[in-house]
Length: 132
Image 1: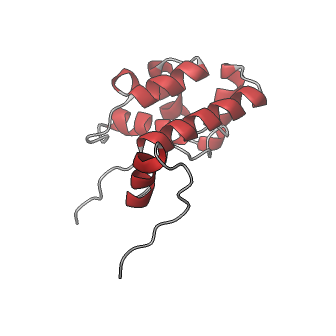
Image 2: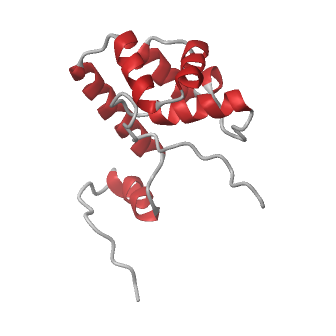
């Protein structure tokens, strides 16, 4: 039986510590440790990971070691919150920033992409009418 390819959780997922990107970072850290990360990048090789780790104030090595050692998202989330020393307001702002950044870089579909292209000329395009 063929194994499915590794695919980390979505960047907007907040299941670990209530912080966007940490669940994805966790998946990638554990997969990298197991040698199953595939074409994904972890730590310093990933701009996204670097941004999240910088916010947390935790190195990629320490994060990976802890994610593997604890091997439980709830325990890892508690460990992160105890070690990153961020207020709920700081977390909220980071989550908003990360979501906005992700949405700008990764259009959901062709309409979203095209709307952004046209937005400079006409900022109020609310929907798309496709010729039948």
